[in-house]
Length: 433
Image 1 (cartoon, rainbow, N blue to C red):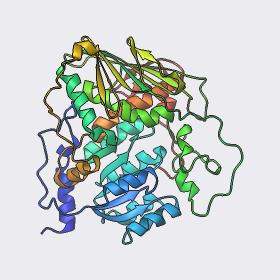
Image 2 (image 1 turned 90 degrees about the vertical axis):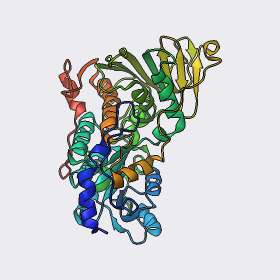
Image 3 (image 1 turned 135 degrees about the vertical axis):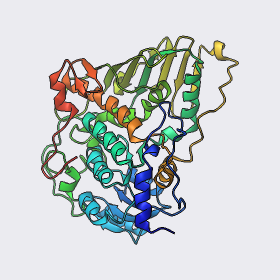
């Protein structure tokens, strides 16, 4: 049995192939050499351990959870009850410094604005990273994290757990089989509303259990206000989240990205209420144009949320949550658990193609296997980084106030210098990417 350090070095050097995946999202046949000990447990650190993070902690609970980190002492102490041998931290920077020779992998389940700094620290130390969606808070961060993951050859997965379901796989197969013909238009709808507004007035004493400065992380300093941000309302404010688009598009836009092999749009424009400097919009419409890909035509792609969700699309009723694909021979609507083909009479005798995308062993299990054996994951940071770039570009276009002509290779809105202010954000002193 090799030493643990030898195994770590081996894993770091052999997972580069596992970080890649064919464009369709089907498992690549190019895999790294298997570990000499795939059944040995990983040493995992968990950054963020409560609320949504608890599911990610649960997803790796079968491994050795050796370190737990959270800015809320109540949360970290609660997780310690489940993992009494795990060392406890509040600051992930100190955790990485102390544990860099003890851990193989890390889960990141913080508020959006600290996803990238925490993930990047892990990547640069050669640790495998599972990061909850959205992968990053900004367009620039998404590109930087994806490139770093490829450079360091670590196994990665973004936490879009719906990607592992059978329904998404079957929809991808149907679209790619040509059942509805070449797809030229997509409508994605989400009736949820994570809109904000003015920051809460005044301040409250910071609870003894909460390390507020660490919660703020790279974001601008502001006073604590009870229940205005922590534990769940931070998504409503630009400094910490991206509103409904930044939250839910990671799941819903994932399906057409996968099925149509999309990557970088050529233009993005957005409509909504008057732009607020602090709060995300109550209702947003984003229109993307994606170029032709091989023999697939260009795609007009629309996202709608909140009160701007259309009731009909392409002559059909449009549910308030889901994706409508419009092809030359028909339409397909899908949500998380079902799909339906139109016109119904044309597809009365439709038989789906034989499954070609393997059944998922589980979203967390995919990543754990990749960490140990160098096998691919379906939401690695190359795929999910491009997805999140497009998602966050919708917010950039809205805040910049004009249509963006987008150069994906250069990460630049060629017609709008003002967009630079929102593509990359400035970090507070003491925080780096």
